[in-house]
Image (cartoon, rainbow, N blue to C red):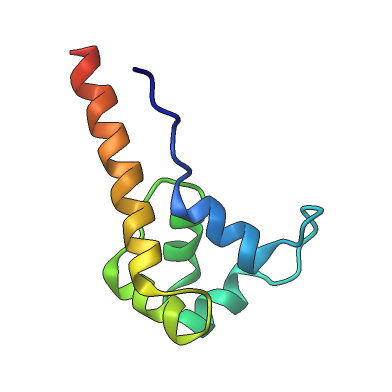
Length: 91
């Protein structure tokens, strides 16, 4: 049974904190990274899907009111599990 591909949490993070509903920039990556206490390059890699959202970043998101840490970690786990299943089924 085919599964739908879950979104990388970075994409959701971008939609919630960087862009509005129309895709217009409402915050800079640097400003959000500062709020989270991380480097803008780290946040940029997460947003671009080239890095995982860590428990540390999940907690930082919770602390700024962007949702529960468990939400972000569950989203990352779903994404990672989907990727692993795809890789193993292709082998």
